[in-house]
Amino acid sequence: MHETEIPDSDFGLIKPGHDYRIEDVRKTSSRLQLECISVQQRNWSRVGMGQLAASPEADQQPVFLKQNIDKLGHRQPEHWKHEQTGATIATELLLDIAKVPALRYQNEQLLLNVFDYIDVITIDELLRSDPVIFEQCILPVTEQMVRVLEAMKTSRMTASRALLPVKSRPYGGPSTAINFKGFEIRNSGLVREVNGEIHRQRLVMFDFVRPYLAPVEEAAAKLFISIGLLNWGKPLSRFALGPDLALLQRVLPTLQPYLDKQAIRSELELQANFRTREFQGSGNLERLLKRFGTETLGKRYLRKLAGWCERHID
Image (cartoon, rainbow, N blue to C red; front, side):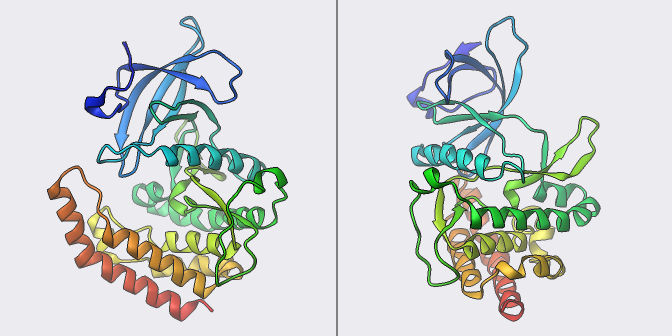
């Protein structure tokens, strides 16, 4: 194996089969050795699996890796910092509600964060791999998300809150609820047991990114619209169907007390700008295909979702 520093030629991308040095985020132990096992490039980061050991004789421990380098090779140092702050605050906030993979190690030079590994199936993955189980799980998950919204709204984390930026909004209640930029249904899942069975009451949440203070209605709008966007993207057959309006109707009564029509409109506008104006891809062809899909299917999808929200949310 090769211990790797940042080579300018490939932007310091972590790669399978290479070893890296990482440090305990609490600065309570010496540097450890991490072996990268697998990596997947996403639009805004690289994620993967690794193994680490405190010594060559110790049993290797699986870990989850996230490197804040996007699909175009651009480094995202601010995202790396926000990832740490968000994970730390979310772990304390949701201690008795949801499992948050603990952030254990880091390498600032590589913009690498290393988390505890939890075998989890994400909500969008569950929808595509087993729609029947998804239908059985989505309402219990939504009910657990109400507990999350309540924790955001009523938190007394005085020391942590004092450091958070405050975002004033023209809707909802006061800007005193803890919000997270990455708060959405796709960044949650259920624990998968050793035998492959899904534990339907063990909610896992991750990728919180930047925390800030805003009305709880903003968090609820993020959650609700992300449920409406579960069919977005792949596979094309689901994308072409547009939003699952029957699903929205099912979860609406549970989330209705937290929903505000103006907050929903604002979130829809944000998502429309994000999804129809900027296209990440590894080459011109991929970006052109994404643009074409958005122009032909995506804008129709968003219009259908916006129209349903106007009719059904007070």
